[in-house]
Image (cartoon, rainbow, N blue to C red; front, side, top):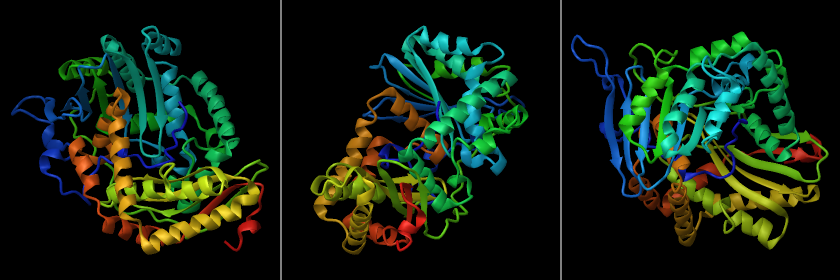
Length: 479
């Protein structure tokens, strides 16, 4: 249940998006208040729609409960397991400065006990049937999930809904988990390969919440009170902000019925409301001017990131970005891997990646190398980025980059967990679920001009540099 860091490599599994500010037909858009049906003179009722019968998957259905909570399922009869997840549109960017780390703190605490179960019961009930549970926090959402045999799905739904909806947040548990989280923060500080990504985000975003640590810091976690966490919990964990997703051998109507039973009488069993819209892409996040930041640390290896602000996740160029990323540093055949590792042996690990948010994004190159080789690695990286910005990529690279994007997406759908995640992210982050065939067609439609125009724009931007290693900032003053 650690803070989730979505760094290396862009995943086409996350590109379940739309054209700029959306030209999708109305029947594939996010749910609206009209989908919480209210018969004349009667109570609100749930509304269910079939979203797709995908030849590469199963039948996808979505129900909007009167409370605004959404339930999406993908029925895959050939499976004998089910992945079940509760996704909340709350992450570390929703915290104020003094609250930094509250979303992650809460993620830990929800497993510590409810009005029905203690911490041991929560874990033992699922483990007794061979299942597994976990959770993660990102900058824009939090996920709690379980994977079980299909016959044990009712148990998983009851346990997971109970812990998300009705945790007691007992004072002794707050103190216990505070110690665990402080140890987690300390452990993270001992991992320079992770720390450099946080340093880079801070260089680009500064004091904006996207630049903060998901876990918070010792200075914010230590004084955080139970009352503050409880307030964050009840204000943020509301039914319209929640998407429940499940994939595997299941029946949609049965899942909806079980969810409604599990939530009955809890704080998520609320008056009729419309589902919350996905995060707005405007106004765009203001980023800092390009800068060099160095964290001096006596390490055997230097860790460097060179990058710039990228594009948000709704940008129509996201498919071209996936291709460009693959060509530059997305695999062993990429330009940077071949030049820096294979031909020159300067680094063990080198890759490019893109992180995309509702209103901003990052594009960067990471390398881990001996401290004495940092200058050469940076020179080669800058030269390659400048070359691609100036002359673009080739037709052969375009074909390879598109093949990597399509292959990684489809291969990633071969387990129930990734299918469950796809449902939830499509609904929670984009307001629609793009069919697999359409997504593949969008990748196929990327042209050489699309990629080269994006490369000229993106790679020509001023670059920030983040370094963790045995240096002081003066060592990179001229860079």
